[in-house]
Amino acid sequence: MSFNSKASPADIMPLANVMARLRDPETGCPWDIEQDFASIAPYTIEEAYEVADAIERDDMAALRDELGDLLLQVAFHSRMAEQAGHFTLQDVIDGITEKMIRRHPHVFGEGTDRKDGHAQWEAIKAAERAEKEPDQSALAGVAIALPALLRAEKLQKRAARTGFDWPDLGGVIDKIEEELGEVRAAASQAEREEEVGDLLFAVVNLARHLKVDPEVALRIANGKFNKRFRIMETLAGDNFAALSLDEKEGLWQQAKRQLQPPR
Image 1 (cartoon, helix red, strand yellow):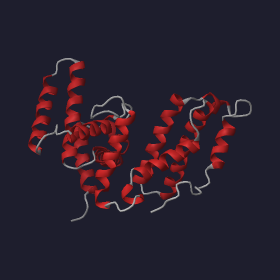
Image 2 (cartoon, rainbow, N blue to C red):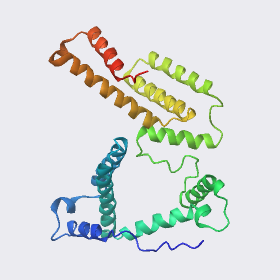
Image 3 (cartoon, rainbow, N blue to C red):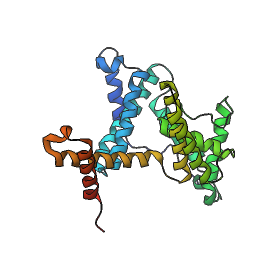
């Protein structure tokens, strides 16, 4: 199959031109001019989370807007890189296009078995990583800046590919109980911090073995808590903070019942 990776893309040049104008040293926006990669990185992360939030709320209008904001971050970083002589926005687009074609030989290649697509993807990724990464560890390339929950899951998956993994769920649960005991036994704040981290890491391992995305699971739990707590506040009125813990627990149970689906 032939595929023209240089086909006309969506017209992204107006955005690139806006970014170039904003970063113009003489006529641009002072705030945009003074930014650098490090100062913009938190905004990039924030916009990615806002995309996820729009998806969670199934709000397509918001998703369109948030994807635009995220695309602006790509244009912003690319413009700064171009000004420093590193790469351009077009280089970014060409690079990811070529990478997707290269990693999908079962789609863009000739006579390739699509059933082996995932295995091919992983093999090609590993080969690319080995070519450009001096660190040959199985854990190489797992970004340190990832959110801790996501990084824990990725580290565990990489280790599991080498055979370093619990053979069954029993070992994972035993490890959680062991770590919980160590949390109870921790005497200093430093020990508590370390042991709670080990416990969280073990719980992520449990989620992985159950094929549960820990980030999604925790978001669901956060959402439940948010809804229940707001119902508690509504039921209590202005008096919520003054209620006893037993009274608040009663409201919590009432809120849980309100949110339970009808049987």
